[in-house]
Image (cartoon, rainbow, N blue to C red; front, side, top):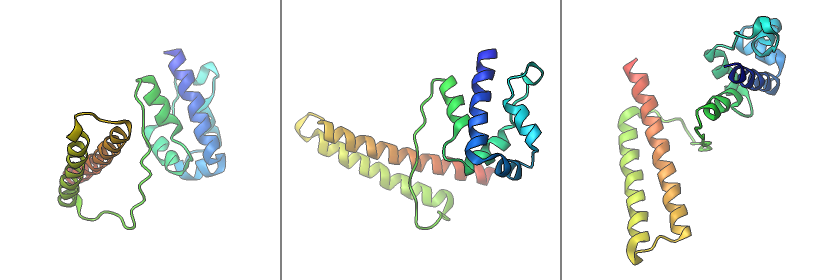
Length: 152
């Protein structure tokens, strides 16, 4: 467990420094001393870690999700970056998500049907299928978040 703690503290420090100590204090409502304890390697602070809500708030302002990435690494999970920048936020909720899901699935099936016409999926066809699969995954994540939001 000590190795995990050291790993998480290192990434917590990187997160605070990425955002800036003063900004991190403002964002989390914590003092410099408290934030410092979260990544201190002193034995007396070995069992102190930043609360997850503070991590989420800081990662919203950071250039990289340092702690989230570290947690994913520990579970051998890879993260992918969603760089979609819609012109306006989705306000349709679950109904709009179901429509988007249907459209994205149709796009994936169309790409698959095209790729399989000759019985061989080429590298370019595989890349297009992968892109559509990732887009479908994004819609599912949006839908999951909307469902969680609506279920309160």
